[in-house]
Image (cartoon, rainbow, N blue to C red):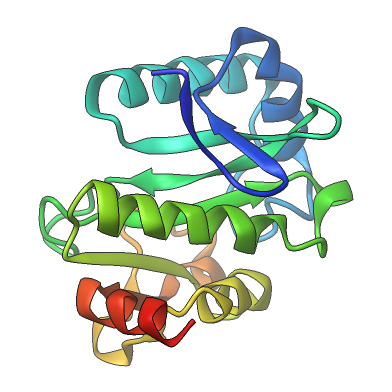
Length: 190
């Protein structure tokens, strides 16, 4: 599975080996990774790239590469993935997430790609709910969640179990969700 879908400005696709430079830029950037406990080396990014490619090819889910149509430049990723943090989130939960290189921030790319992922999830994959979560004060990600129509659900906020004790400020996560019925209602209102 190479091509996933496209938007007005983006190709959403599986990863290629030549995307390693972008993967490293994103995952080692202090601003991009401000709400994550660690930065990744180039070698760790190469491993992550292979994991993402394998997950997408085996399940059809994962974080997909985003490529600008006008330049062919890869700029980040967005996708639907299985967070696998049971029992906090039940098995089968699908999250939407994104990460862009900083030169591509504030241009609407994350929102554009995320809207395409919601459409894919609800119309083609038949999902009943898509969720997202971020560190409680990650205003950039929370703003994208709100722009794409996800709703906060404070009753489902949680402390992320994979955040090490060395980073307690990153543990609390705010939870957002959108049901298929809510998606359908949003689409009818357009």
